[in-house]
Image 1: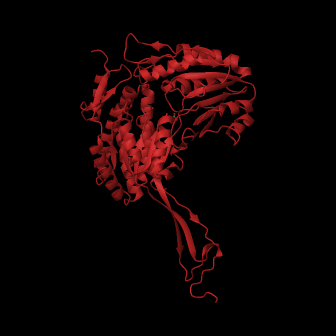
Image 2: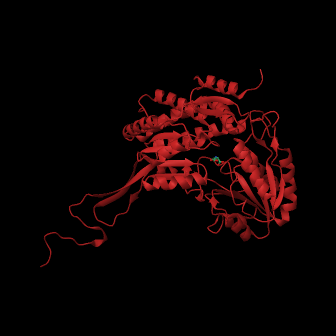
Length: 507
Ligand code: UN1
């Protein structure tokens, strides 16, 4: 029998031990061949209402469960993910189109955040604060926040949700998840794995993790509903610009992880062997569809004519094809719209630079799929198109001669997610990481801008939205802080030395 993504998808669901969903309005198409793999029901107003009231009720129960016990549920979920890593990684590849090692890596990223969250469940620390008043104590307590809405994007269909959900769960929150309408099956499968962990846990409240499927209207409903305390959204800057004010209008919280137009500076002393590998992975990996993908490369004059021809050779040969095949390094773009956006960007770039790549590949074999040869564009200047994020494998390459000037051009982007420098000169590396250096949330030395570990805080500045997810102290976004001042004395001293003696006023 010939290869069919529908058959492959069915096999992954067999491995999970649940039937592949085939009913409903929301169609899952594989970007590998454009064929339908399954369907799920889209949420309507009535089902959304039921979900939100269940999630709210679940929060009221869950917030009282001791955090380490909440961590136990996340530990069990991590076990399910470990046991199902192969099938889920494959399903990620089938539905998002990333190569299998990256599909498996995405599930590993979920496992990693589970482990992190389990440890965190015993470390939700608050401060003890020095007080100016005698016989007083001051401290802060972190409490569960409420229902957390998670809106995730197609390119990391499950890991980014897990960053949010695992932290939210140990923090005592319930979770309502709206996955991308392009990746409904992976979300459906993860929901089933979570339900299995919850059954093993025993007394997790119903509604603790809910999935709502559908398009923009469903996301808007989450943005507008006052029962959602925090909306954590990953997607385009355009989406964040609309969503942010809607949530703010009701004084809800947002955690935004939006676009990136990530840059790298290659200095005269750079190890070019390392640099070329890092550049290739960051620029063409995941078909340029990571928010951390490398899009702008600034190469010093002294190494430009060595490095750039090497990149041209890599770009010309990089294997583009079925992401399930061993040896493929670049899979398809998610859909025809993405390919059209890539072509538009390249046509504009061609007016100011030299374009290599960008051709539509495998069109005869898969007329409904969108494989593209990654593009490398040498630009004489950082024109408008370079400063616009195109979610596709396009690397704009520019020369520089002065590091401060390169840093200024690097920071000229409206986005501020991830950045990197290749240098073996300590002064240059430290300058790039200093207050006057890269203005991004992620600043790397001798590694590319993509592929972060879960242990650090993930997110960025400016039009990237300012949110931080995943490691470090990102958990605080999922809790509310109470400052407690306790008087254990027999007097009532007021702060700032204010005298307020009732009944003793001088006449
Ligand atoms: C994203 O593209 O939305 O750092 C997230 C990385 C991954 C996460 C990317 N760990 O590239």
